[in-house]
Image (cartoon, rainbow, N blue to C red; front, side):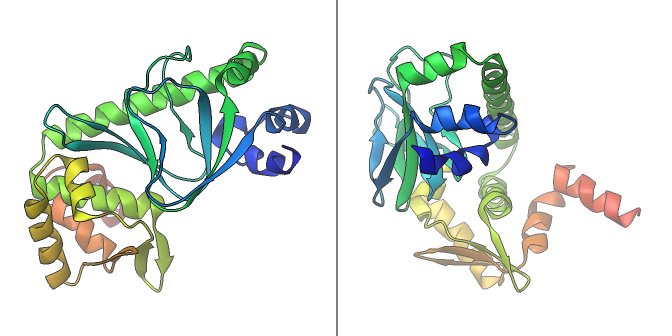
Length: 244
């Protein structure tokens, strides 16, 4: 669609392409507007299209043998999904659903395959994105396996604040209505444990949670709760600043 061209040029995958190239891609897109907590596709469904987030928020998750949800990622403006190694109408290993009302651009699978086949530059970018996501996931798994539940929860709140937060008057507002259960599903612990952590952070005046999201009142204090325990990236940055 013609009106989607400027929007597509802001997405990481299409940056660097000419206006004509992006316009041809835009002609393939189909807009979709979905309400809150609606599935785009479910685990086991065949992959029929690739999607780009225009605005809103998508989460990807799957259900284990006991029926518990495990959240893998949250996707925002410009992110693409599903991001897999092949596009051959294979069954999706995850469910993708909206967290809030979300606007998407969809490109039918076959059209996207033809697009990659005819554009080496785009194909290389696609490979780079997949490699980056794999490295990010590996880093998260290693980091999470080495941390306590408290550190996992705090690290995830820091991640949300840094990637989705909006600075307002020294605070960071994260307009993502993540429930205690969703947070627990992401870090792999019981809801009650996560609730105790959030209650503790609220009492310390560091984090305030509401139905519309949460506010980090002191991001540095939140970082220091995990930084003082290990030589993490936040610690190294803090030391660099202290050393001038």
